[in-house]
Length: 79
Image (tube, rainbow, N blue to C red; front, side, top):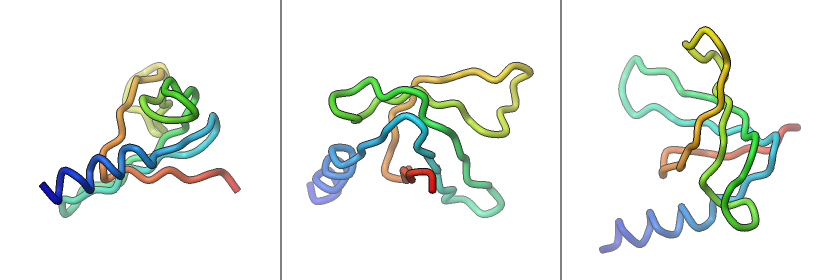
């Protein structure tokens, strides 16, 4: 139950604005973190889900994806 409460609190506190960066931290050795730019917040008042344009996208054409951040995601404002 305590883990569920922490996850729910983390998801409620995720607030983002267009232009903010989202960073997904890797938990596995040898894996790189993933970074993207938030292009749209579809939830109420900047809450998830977000439209994200990933940096270093492996696809030929850059594209946006609908993203629901987990507890391994951090949101940073551009400075």
